[in-house]
Length: 211
Image (tube, rainbow, N blue to C red):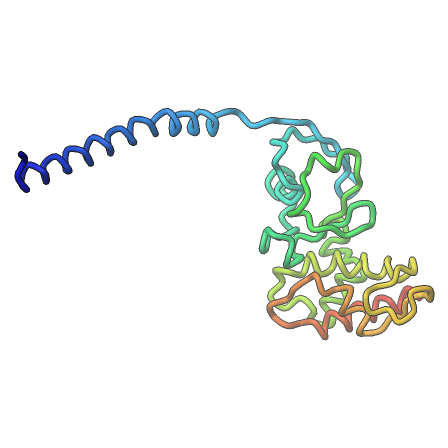
């Protein structure tokens, strides 16, 4: 009959054998995972117009439109903020409609016409919305400004087209250019500096010029 000491040694041996067995069985799984990770990405060609210029890229199909613009076309005016579609810093316009470029894949935009902040104006020839942001200090730290301006331009297009918003009192009437309407429509673009009232002033001024 085994004594207490012999029983303790047997338990240790059993645990050691079990640990070795588990480790050896996990090796093929780890190797398989590494093999999968080492596989080449799936590449695809995509062609679209960016700021009026034809562009043709060969990209990993997982590349977002934001990364294609910034990393492959060096259009770094469009900013990467949260990368989750919550801050609006990456806003660009596709066929006149604003989108969060971090939430869409580049290959989904074959043949599309894309406008970034670089396509709206230049330092020597500012777009009216860019000039209004400067005048009313709607940019402050500036990080969110490209997305804010692209959204603001699109917002005026929405109102002009008669598209209602969540706060429109009458969905069948033409939207009114009120501070409430502008704040609602711009709510997807977050400014940490708190320049919201200045941004509303800038949009209002541009809207007044275009009437």
